[in-house]
Image 1 (cartoon, helix red, strand yellow):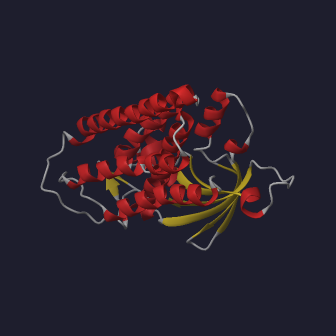
Image 2: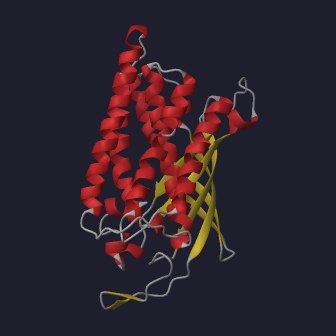
Length: 302
C-alpha cells in the first residue's frame, strides 16, 4: 500500500489538473478523449517506471511468487488499497466524461484505472524477493473499483463515497523507518493515524429529490486501527531501544461528513477543487467503538 500511494498521489494530482482543460465541445470530443487516454497512458508508464526505480530497483528480484499478508496491520492496508482503487477510478471516469466520451465507456475505461495501476504494483511485488503478489490486495483493489462502477451503472452517481483521513500518533516515534519520520511520510506509512471512510449521502439514499434536506450533508462509517508498531505483531525494541507494550485494536467510527460534489457550481476550477477535497473526510464530532469494548466520544476527529 505504501508503494502504491507513491504512484497514486502523483496520478491524482495530474489528473485533477489536466481535467480542467477538457470541456465538452462536440467538434473536439474525439481529440479530447485521445488526449485524456494518452495522458493516462503516459502517467501509467511514467509512474510505474519511477516507482520501480525508486522502490524496487534496490531490492533483490526473484521468480514470481505469492505472499499472504492478509493478517498484516489489522487489514488497514487492504482498506487503503480499496479506497485508492475507488478514488483513482473516480478521477479517470470524470476526465473521460468531461472529454465527451459516453457514460458506459467512461465507466469501464475510467472506473478501472485504479485497478490497472494497482495490479501492476502487485506484479512488481510478485517479482521482488522482499514481497510477493497478494491476492488479498487484489481483492481489495477489485472491490474498490467495483464499488465505483456498480454505483455509476445503478444510480449514475456516487451515493456512497470512499474517503481518507489522518492524524499524527505517538507510534511513529518508536519506528520512524517503518511508520514515517515526518508528517508526509506518516500520512502514507503510519496506519495507526489513518482512517478509511464510507461517506453516505443521506438525501440521495433515503429522500426524494424535492426534499429540502441539505444535499451536501453525509453520514460516515469509518474503520481504523491503533497500537501497531509492526505489521503482523508488535516489536519490543528498535535500534537497541525498548518499545512499550501496546494493545493492538480495531476502531469503528460514526460521524458526519460533507459531500463537496453536491455543492452546486458552474466554475471549472471550483468543480475540480471540490472533487479533490472530496477525497478527504471532513473533521466532525465522532463516536468510536473499539475491540476493547470501549465507546469513545471525540469532539473533533481527524
